[in-house]
Amino acid sequence: MLDALVNTLTKYVTLSPEEVDIIESLFIFRSFRKRQYILQEGEIARFETFIVKGVTRTFEVDEKGQEHVLQFGLEDWWIGDLYSFLTETPTKSNIDCLEDTQVYQITKPNLEILYERVPKMERHFRIVIQNAYIASIKRVASSLAKTATERYLDFTTQYPQIEQRVPNHQIASYLGITAQSLSRIRSQAHKKQQ
Image: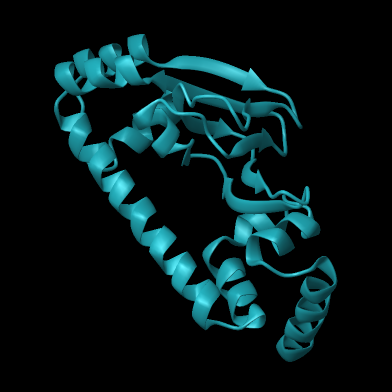
């Protein structure tokens, strides 16, 4: 399973066998059951998490008890609350597993050791954070400027593997619409495809 992590880490840099050994020594492998939390509101995010297998959802709960899905996570994705992780302050987010999920995690102190012992990893994580920032800006712009139908079509184009693995009401929450609206949009989209 370490191969999945190493393959992702070598997307932007080349690693020697010695550097892979350092990585292996600094990451922790963990398994979570479906519906189990990786992070809960009020906790401090102690790990950055790489998904080997499974699906996660990052969400917040408003004062009315309504859940708002911020992100889904799939195989080969990084998840976590970077703000809480870096500032060591309590998170407002929750991350739970929508399937049985296997991950590699790294603590902040171990990430600093990784940067020190394998400096090229800073390049990898810089690119990952840049890409996450760009995706976040695009998502905000989309939610402000696009119709619900356009957001749904963008979602299914960009993340086709998620739709089959995530409950409809959670996709609707991610898109900022009701489950009934999502059903109607899907129905109209399928009619246009026929």
